[in-house]
View (cartoon, rainbow, N blue to C red):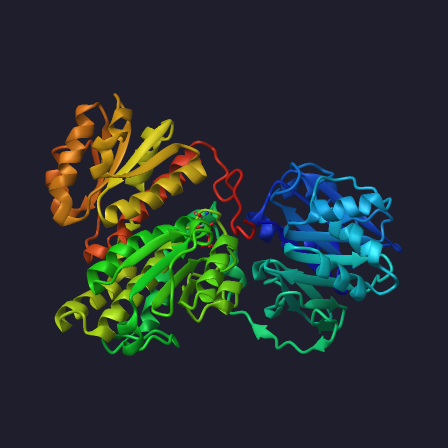
Length: 609
Ligand code: M6R
């Protein structure tokens, strides 16, 4: 969702804010703005459109002098993208400027309340109500006004605030939306995400719900919701600046696709020691695993698709009932959970609103929770009973690639760890799987070597209106992700179906030239897939088969095109088959001239419901 940044220091604020916003633009990109303390008053510049528009208006920041300010890049929730709805939002009397990520759920009620008392609103946003309330409750003490406002607003917020009366301070507060404070030498920052400030500092503090930070040039003070001062330890961020930059690639997405072998290595290697799986500090003893009656996997989007693969892996290795749920459904459907349920929560950002709510619901019902998260210290990581990090580094492109691969790796690690503790597999079989897992990075490297074949294939079909992905078992799970990847960045309509379902409806969509991408890596179900391919071909479909070398000759008898991926253990095959299909989505989008890293209507981190 939206990105916020704030600065106070010796430098000119506007260029620092613009630089931070550039790195946060993946969170929202329909409008942007900054507010700076300038010559004794608050000056606000904001505009609908990409950050370039604001950059132009500010002439790279030079137009807005001042060393204290806040900035915002927006993903509209309340009010269409427009200059007036852009942030910062200001109060009627011009005393406060506010940037906000989240949703103020009771904003209409609060707005009506203030309107009746003579306050004039100019925007359609929920955020304006915060700025107006701050001024309404302000009696010379900004902290007290913030306390009064946060007591009254419902919903989620990360807020950066400046007040005309306090030219040497930036205020920040959050609830259920991420916000960090960066500590530099003679300068301080706030940001939605650490990537915005990595080039200035790697020392950060994370605000907890309703904690308030007051930033001054040489110090930052923290307060609890009742305004008692608190100490907060600083932590050092491991990510380096280069990892959040394109490094010569045209798009973050291609960089991140190519980073997958290394990300897999970092995620897997430390957890395989002396032929055993070692899971950091995760508390899942043999007794606890034995007592489990059910495992739920809950996530959204790509992370949910990891769950779809996990179901096959867990059931095969553990013979334990597994349910995979979309978080937005799970949270409202009153799932049946107890202390014998393990709920595995998967989230790259660790901040997805529905996934976080699902985690809280699981904990409320007494289930044990284990989170697979990429962002260290994120809310989900903090709140789950146990956390396993994917060591993918920052993922900037909206379309998830290396997060998917590393989440899959962690899922395999968990399943194999549980099998190891339960002695659920013969030792040679377990050993074989561990060796395959160890080889995944090298196999991914090999698979990504041939980009040209996929690029050529994309050049033949990037103009297609529709495409269908079919598969069975884990190949179906990979189809779900391949289809999402294609539609989110190339805007080509696509669907994923279990191949066995074709005859129950979707086959009516097949006609001359329809493109079907058939993932057929599962040996056990290969003959069935061949039969499905014949059926769609008989209706005129063109078929690209994704398979492994030893099945290629047979597949070639039916498929029009094919691409071979390296073979590994059956349940790990999605880690291979997804790679050419990520590339296919990338090239198709690129050939269509789409904005690959920032697809329309999407944002990287969905921190609102
Ligand atoms: O940060 P999370 O893993 O919780 O995000 C979940 C989804 O929003 C995310 O995977 C989304 O589907 C991606 N854009 C897919 O590429």
